[in-house]
Structures are given as structure tokens and as C-alpha cells.
Image (tube, rainbow over all chains, first blue to last red; front, side, top):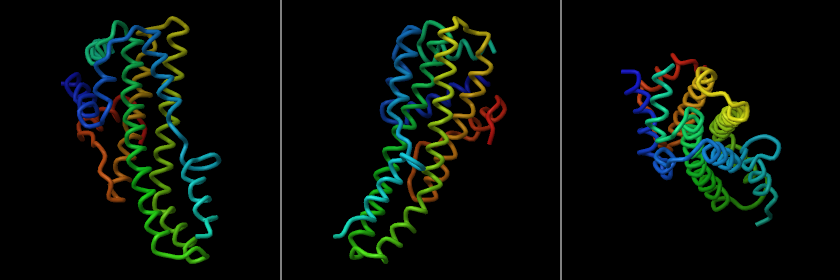
Length: 66
Length: 151
């Protein structure tokens, strides 16, 4: 039962989120899998706080004069 | 924890526990990227509407602040999720570098469960703003809690 539930977790994400299915089914060795994970992690932006993309966007919008 | 090893090998189609856990990390990272992109676009649209409706000045800036504040909680939740994924990825990387495998799986699974629960928080906060993200079944959330995630 537990195996089925956890498998359902990854299927739920893989089925619903674009691009995830390929991640879940692509076969990689240890080095490739770890390197790929670290490359993906670098793509996640911070949105709030210092250096956050959302905070910077808001500040830029408030400085517009038109 | 043997079943987790088998599951990760099966789900990830991988040749080892490390590759399986790394693949699981890539799945949740891709989910974060996808959810973040959708929420970026929705927030942009909401703020663009403010700019279209009001002339530049204090009134518009106050409205921009108000709308941005509505999006702040989900932005912080995305950042919490990002942080948890980074810790997970670093742990998988260290485990790989140290040559460990099954012995560290319980800790990695607990970290992964926390990532799952944080993703679910993002889903809930996004829904309150009218954005539907892929949702996880309640049984999966319960499993993540039981495995060691914190909510």
C-alpha cells in the first residue's frame, strides 16, 4: 500500500507538471543524475527578500513615471 | 526502508539509490520551476492591471504595494520550497561524494517528505489567489507527514 501511495505521488507530479515526466523516466547513472539535479537547482530563482525577483520587480514598477 | 530503495529504482528507472534519489529531486525541482513560472505570470498580470488602471504616482504605488502583499505569502512559500530542495540536493550530492547509499536513505526520504509538504503549501496558497497548480492526493500528504516531513 505504501509503495503504491508513494508511486502515486510521483505519478501525480509527473502527469500534471510539464517537463516532469521526462525527469521521472529518464535513465541516468549516479554522476549524471546528481549533476542534472544540481543544474536544475541552479535555475530556481529567489523571489522575496534581498535579491528576490519579485521584490526587484515591485521596486522597478514603483519607479516608473508613466 | 528497503521498499523506498526499490521504489526509487522503479520510479526513477535508475541503477542505484543515489541516482533514484537524485531523480526524485529533479522531479520536485521541475515541479517548483513550473509552479514558479505560472505564479510569476499571474502576479505580473495582476500588477500590470494596476499599472493600466492608475496613473503613475503615490496612489498607484500604494495599490501596487497592496497587490504585491497579496502575493507575498506564496512567494515566501516558493522560497521555502527552494531552500528545502537545495538542502536535499546538497545532501544527495554529499552522499554521492562520500560513497554512501542505502544507509543515508532514511534521512534523504525525510528531507524529500518535507519538500513534498512545502510544495503542497505552495499549492494551497496559490489556490487562494485563484491559481490552480497540480495538487497531491491527501493520502500522499499523509504519507509524507508520517515519513518525517514537518508542517
